[in-house]
Image (cartoon, rainbow over all chains, first blue to last red; front, side, top):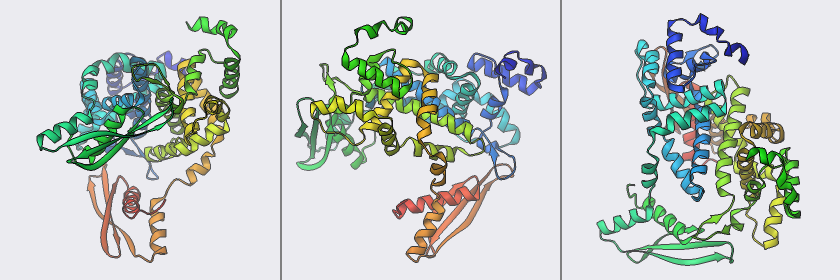
Length: 246
Length: 246
């Protein structure tokens, strides 16, 4: 099947719209589609879903579910290798800053998805959902994965997508809850104090418990494998409790 | 580097403990480790972490973060291909029933991780965390991925791990929120009623809004692309609001 596709015989019977889509995919992904049907599905937003009977609707939502997982794994490995001395909390936080809905929408726009998605939707005069580009980008990743496999998709993401991110800036703004709560205290004239209350465990395995008092009253406690982590946890809990904007 | 590893010269300098670990990995994964260091790290639970100075601790938590993503993608694709007519909500729910902490713990025990993890921990007399086998299983998946690549890992999961799951049973028990709330109402003698309040959109794209009243009082509403989905959403919100055990 793959060999037949590699011969590109199917390109001989593309209509104009299909030829345009194949060319657009080549611009975005770097290679021509082997199975164009996957990409046609990827640009079909739920709002333009086709009903095929039995209440079953055909849209890109299934591909989006797959692409979301594939993208998450590729970014996870990239950060894992790039930051050998950072813990999993940092890696998880940084990844979620890369793959959040808003940043994926921007990526979708940057790589020009609005040109191929709008042509699907605008001709039907439908309402454009605001997260449509992020959704479509994830579905596109799912389509590339099924069409070309994992390693091609990884190469596509690392060389053509991650370059749009300012990773240094993303990391710099990873939230420091302790400084947030200190800022808040200064602004509203409160006294806060972090104090180490207990250390559990033995020589090799320790758990630190930090108490945070606000104006002399016990507010929250935080636990962690280091004093710094326990303080961050306590500060985070306090920020949530006090609804401090982050 | 990979070629040197394939020559297995490193096996000549394994000590007894390393030889045992390599044999255990071969039993579990199906192939001998190319880079044993990855597997040594995978079985090092956070509670047995080694400090290497600067407050940096070496444990399997980073590998667990990576393995979690890889496992999620492999299961996502498997379900995507196995159920071509089920929507992404079903796929997401089914996946989360496979990769939840409890079922991963059981998998860890079934494939015998307690034999290699306990030998790391018990000799130090440390407390065994209850989620240790699930955590270690995820870390092992991360190690296999780095050692042998994506497709080998996929083959390992599909042929040696998924066979432990009774997928039919998992699907049968996928929660039906509507029947849960109906059950609850019958048990505690409440009157509940689902009613379609609005349908937004045009001929091709519809959004249904369903109102759920409890004893004649508006309780929650649910939205969805079909009436059935909107009812499920409303029922789910009600279950959460009323703390109905699922």
